[in-house]
Length: 169
Image 1: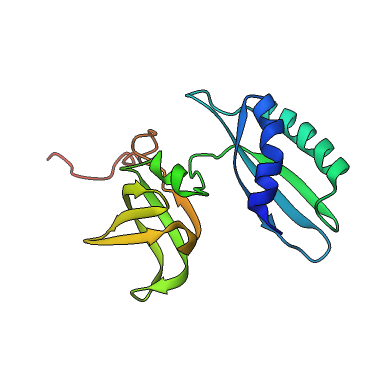
Image 2: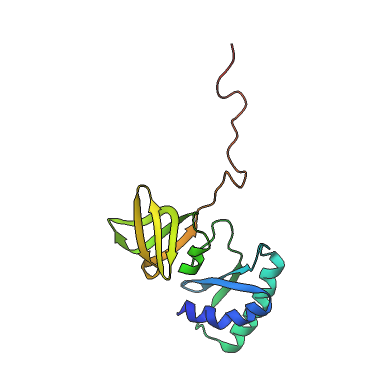
């Protein structure tokens, strides 16, 4: 299945709802497959459950009419969440300075999994700092990518348990 073509096909319907199609994941299954559609809002407004429901109704109707997918599948519409998937170089460009986890299609320097800061994006070229090395990647080398949540900035740092740590005597 060409998920990019499907995303382009669905984009106008989402645009009418004030939503953007970030990307699509297709997870084939034996009896039933999963079509997961990630949506976002432009600006600072977060995606709501109502947005997901409206998008699901609209996309379901469109898919029922066009019928581009053979077999049985489940449609899931989701917000990007805090570990936001990155589907294209443009999306990497929105998060310069942020940390991302990337899985490459083929190993590079003996590694398929990279975790580092997004340093620069030019066209489809993505530069990441991984440990002490720079990696220059073309987007078509990437199998999947997600942002790494900054748990401290989100206020989720673990608090010391009472009675642990240094004691005064």
